[in-house]
Length: 123
Image 1 (cartoon, helix red, strand yellow):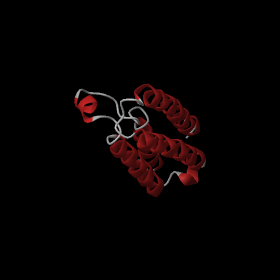
Image 2 (tube, one colour):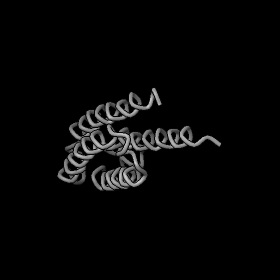
Image 3 (cartoon, helix red, strand yellow):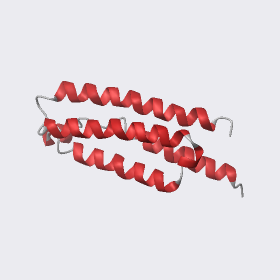
Image 4 (cartoon, one colour):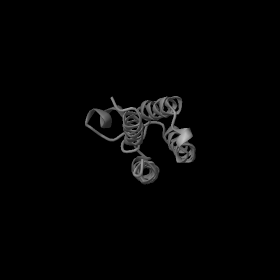
C-alpha cells in the first residue's frame, strides 16, 4: 500500500499534463475543427472531470468501482463527442482526438484499482 498514494497522485498530474496537450491541440486546430464551440465544451468538461476525480481519488474511499465506472463513462463521452469536432478526414488519416492522451488516465486508474484489489485479497 506504500506506493498507492503517490501513484494515484501521479494519475492526477498526468491528467493535468494531458489537459495542457488537449488545449494545444484545440488551439492549433481550432480553425479546421468542424464544431470549435463543441471542442471547447469538451475541453471544459475534461478540466472539470479532472478536478473532480483528482479530489475524489485522493481519498481511498473515493476509489470505488462506481466512481471508476463513471470515470470511464465520462472519458468515453469526451472521446466520442470530440469525434464531432475533429474533421472526419483528419480522423481517417490518423489525426488526434482532443482527449487523445487524457483517456489514458482512466486506464491507469483501473489498473491501479485492480492491482489494489488483487493485493488486498490474495488467492
